[in-house]
Image (cartoon, rainbow, N blue to C red):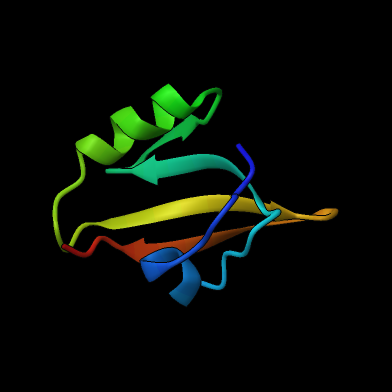
Length: 71
């Protein structure tokens, strides 16, 4: 999934347009993002204040960033 726009907590984590979001780790479980539907399903289950790790690829480099879910 390629980032089209980054604002809010994504921007604070320095995720930028063009980055590829490969997977999310929620509650210790890593899920590959094979579709927007998968991404949206994971987001729906998040609670305010919960921490999520996101595997982001920029060019040849992939790294995890940790985000805290806001309102």
